[in-house]
Length: 307
Image (cartoon, rainbow, N blue to C red; front, side, top):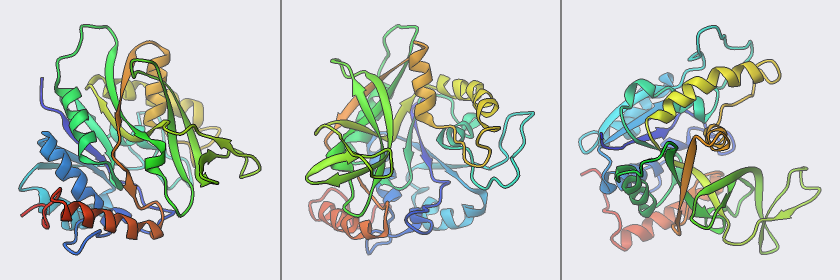
């Protein structure tokens, strides 16, 4: 079996944050959040990282991120282009954004020949999560007809921001830690000391139980997942382009859920108590910088990661 590789979804612009937040330095050394993720992944055992980017951002991405780490870990680039569609499909008039996280990962199909992990570019996941995912992907699997995937599960309270709402996939697991269901909640906030979500623009709120696990889009897959994405993407387009041509998105969790419903895949949820950090809003940056400074002071990271 080939060694697992890391896939980083970095093609999106941070609309709520205002700009290409993946490039925003988080310390005086000029590191961005992604530097710490790739560094943690490298220490966990990953030897190659594939960045999914927009072609027009390549020069800036290489200059700000990719080139400085390429001496320590193999780097490759894949473009998520709007017109990267199956034969017979065309980009709808007026559409400006690509077709979601499932579409992004599918763009890597020719670059992956074994197990792989997937993360967002703008989330700080913590070292423990990378180690758990790598160890799972590297370990011999049970002889079963079902695909065996993995997901890092974060405690909901460790993934919130003080500056607005967040979107999270709230997970339901069985007694052995296997994923049963993910419910996407697009507006989760801290309210009156509790974690709550709304689906009617704030008219009513529902409490999420304390300690619930959520997905932060940190997955581990076998290579066969790419074949499944390739088969399911045209079906998705046929079902959704006519109804929502400008905004429909082909999401990773949706593809995983379909495979679970068909009894083709099982997903192990590995709980991590690491705290998530991210810059969903500009005001989040100060807290991320403070956390990184504390990690450095405690010896978790050197002052300069790639020297």
